[in-house]
Image 1 (cartoon, rainbow, N blue to C red):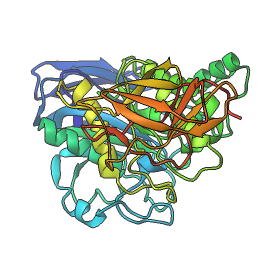
Image 2: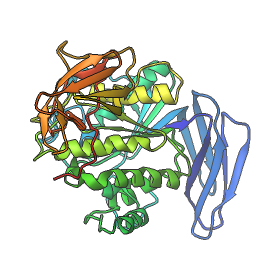
Image 3: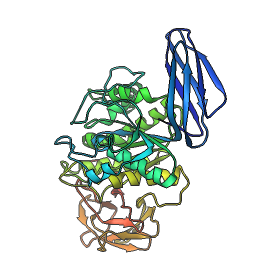
Image 4: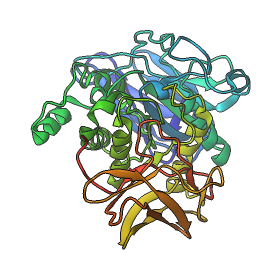
Length: 442
């Protein structure tokens, strides 16, 4: 396994009631002891040092457990729905494989990357342990044990999670532990604790609780709550496309609730859903809800407007998705001077018959990925009728206008479900879709 470096690792388990347990980790000369409670539960905190290993832990009670080949490094949880769960190889009509799957599997020989797959398990009550779960979409039952990353075990692991871990490992040269707890076709409500959902529904004066509400949190996230982690990566949103108006509040609630359960303000980096031919413009509103989540501290968003597939809800370039998530971590958590986000809309200024747009994360300047003028811009006046607009890059800003709109007040960019626009910064990271208005979805 990998334990979080420079932290306190919680070692916990079950024994006979009132049984005395002694724990010794060989990176630390201190011995810890604890007495199991009346229900046989026990836990102890072990301080961890800097990245390294292998180490071992001996747990002694009426019997002895000896844990070997333990590394200290960085531990992350990966969660969400099918685009996070999506494995390397073809397993079903849903999971048809990623780009260069065979080559990636053959090259996945990283003994210092450790993988843990949580089984697909739903529960009406919070669980204390993981379960191998139900095989879905061709993914086999989870082993529910740590494994050193190798071609023998990576093929059915979550590919985005692996590429995130690989990029961190290659850039930091330290062990990485990645825990996959994802399940295809699932809404955010299923991953949110019940009490937090109830509070959210009360505040919205609405019933924001589908039939499977909280069941995946109970079965797949709650059992992980004692693991010391650096942070979380997340790829979900497709199952909430029809309820975009609720998603910002729901998503923020979920993130905040996880942090409260862990009692730590860990970073949470997520993927904006990719272009796909959804009905109407539902995905555009969902992407905007995701973008609005960025005002929650320690969040980051990997944009995929340029690497989607309008006819495949499971785009195959998971290598770049994992890398873009890792860029956020490298910049924000590991102090590396790297560009980590594409342009994010910040402010609009009306200038007579045109609107000037200002952005964060311009990096070395704005550009397009096809050397053409910026595409997919629309502009509207008071009548809220949007017209295709001409957009020009002006240094770190963009000027938008349309002959049909003499007095523009609002701009939208890439605001359709399947838009594949071209705006990026010179670091090659794409701009998020956005709108300057806050008009209700019709």
